[in-house]
Image (cartoon, rainbow, N blue to C red; front, side, top):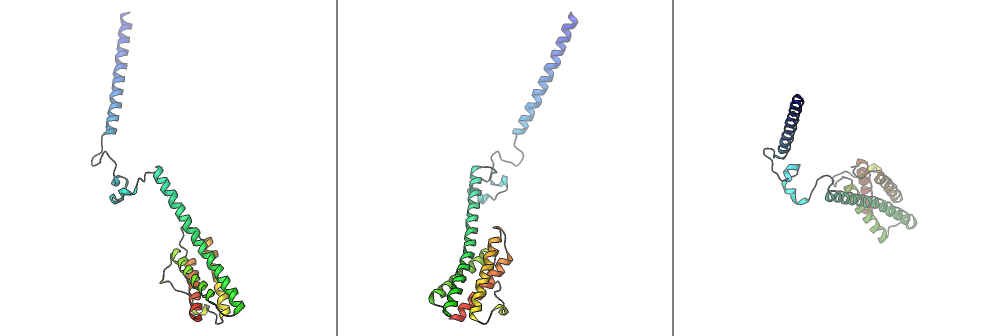
Length: 199
């Protein structure tokens, strides 16, 4: 009887020791997790997430924060709007080129309205080129591509405007297209030639 009681006491003592050791170990791990690392601040700052300290005022860029998601949606919306405007400009260039071509075929001369349309075509084509990643220094139309007859010049401008519109519509938003830049430059050179010849 006394032997069983000693065994139970010993068993209880071992259990208590194991429980105490487990609690001490868990407490030590918790305390270790709460101790700041050397050279670190208990408060997050701009440098802790890789941002420039000057960008502190730009808001919270933490993944999944409502502010970051809202900003991302606004950026995507703005990019889509700019892309739609880019495509719309190419469509307007084609529309203007077609109108000028029909007008010239009928009258064999440019009126003041045609001059305004050609000027608008030039501005829009420059904008398309620049938005596609081109610049003023890019080359224009090759002289051998310029037909001698004005009626052929106008038709070629309408054809090139159509090709430009197709290229712009097929080019994704975030792509810099050398083909679009080249086509815009060719059309721009042709329109400038038509306008210069016509003054």
